Length: 223
Image (cartoon, rainbow, N blue to C red):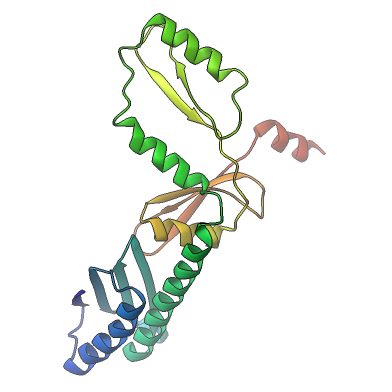
């Protein structure tokens, strides 16, 4: 595994580099197929952040991308915390993989598979008969069935798939997003019961979008 160490607004001492290599040995033992680890050691110049002036960011390229960061007034402490978070994510990843053989695919996984399939399943030359069959298959389509809906007067068809998914928390959705290495993740929010999507923002922050029926929302507000 390649290890890249970068200092931002600071120099990384040999002692710190040695500590990083030691921590990455443990990480590599849990992720033997990881190809690269990027460690940023950041010194915050803002005096208001004195208690968190030393930050360590770790990005691990394994099956996907796994990230963790920690801040403290001592960079060695920040390294310990960040590496511990990476290790915890890897352990949870192993647990999920062990259970995956007996579980249904996630909503996001199904969507990703369909998007990948679109590149090899073009139907721009569909005949009128095929379009009619497509509409008929749309009506009454069962869950987990893939159907194609034509756009009238155009060669465009829309691939649609309904998938059953178990509700998960936002934190679990972020873990899954990092596991698959995507920039967003579709899920059913266990707290709100709404169809939602988490996404990666700039830096080390995330966002979440929830879709709510405006008629139901208006009904609650008027109650």
